[in-house]
Image (cartoon, rainbow, N blue to C red; front, side):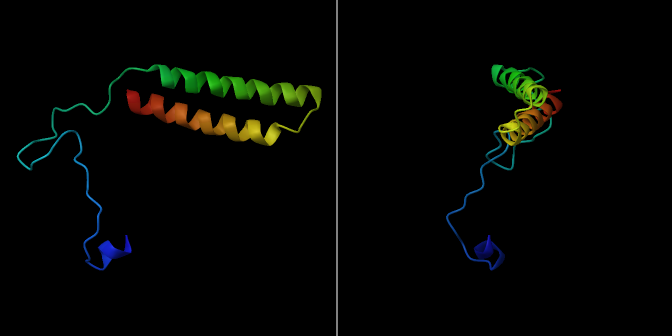
Length: 89
């Protein structure tokens, strides 16, 4: 990043977005969002539910040892699932 700010060339090459290689192409009419859920999105949702269940089970039996890990995993998978669903429509 610093090399770019100083105007020096580096090995970084920007990849084309949406299959546009030349400036002649246009991005209008190309779909970025698919509008469908894939298996990975469903798996992320199921893992979110699983870790939320783990939080509830740990709280109900009074075992707080894995609570920090379950919180991190539930929030992480939950956010990834949320943004996957939000950007798919």
